[in-house]
Figure 1 (spheres, rainbow, N blue to C red):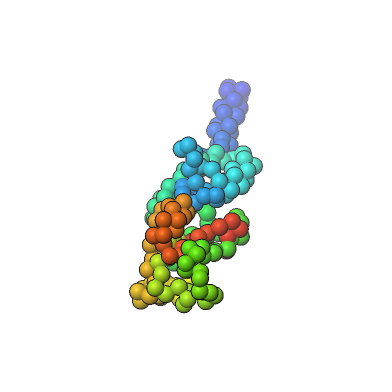
Figure 2: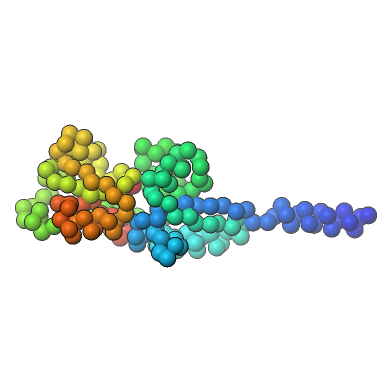
Length: 187
């Protein structure tokens, strides 16, 4: 009887210490940081986090790619445990992070015609232009948002860097907010 109880306790202990399954959602369209390739999540952030998750034997972490705006909504509605890339923003009190994964900077890329005249003052020197930005991102700053609201700058949002780059190449954007490598932004 003692043996059966001991075996039962060992089986119960094994069940208790089994790895907990957790799903982390990620922006599926933010290359080179996080994006889907052949149906699987990949990218710089994904590689870093997979390495971290591999060192957490008590958890079985699954990464699921979703559109950024959907991921934000899932976080706001408490439908998901975590979303990356993480960007702290005052408009998102439902997202708290201890530290960023990487430090990022934001840059504006323009067609040559637009840069024929120097434009050192963001966003004042960009009035009258169309700025491309990934859907759900909050980059640009308060003055930029005020200029968009006042109709001084047109904002064109789309899903992903690649689509915004195509708009820029096809001259559908006069300039574009583009998050490049080593980016500090408030997505």
